[in-house]
Length: 66
Image 1: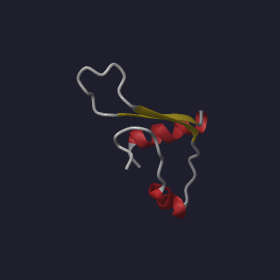
Image 2: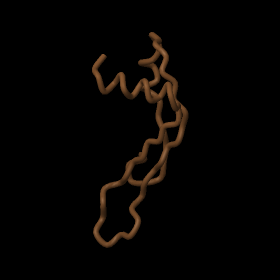
Image 3: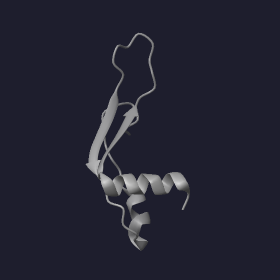
Image 4: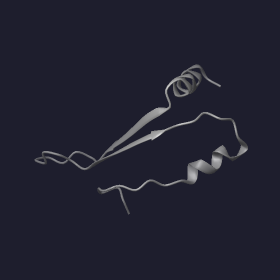
């Protein structure tokens, strides 16, 4: 496992709160572009089923939602 990845895992073990934010492409003249923020708690646990989590989807409001 690479150095930065281990640091992230240590940080999650220390404090499981995580935030992911997603911004829509900027549009000229628009004051506030659409965005989504996901606040959650993470857990670092080795598992053969971890790859299954990659198929999860998260919804939101904006042009990226189909």
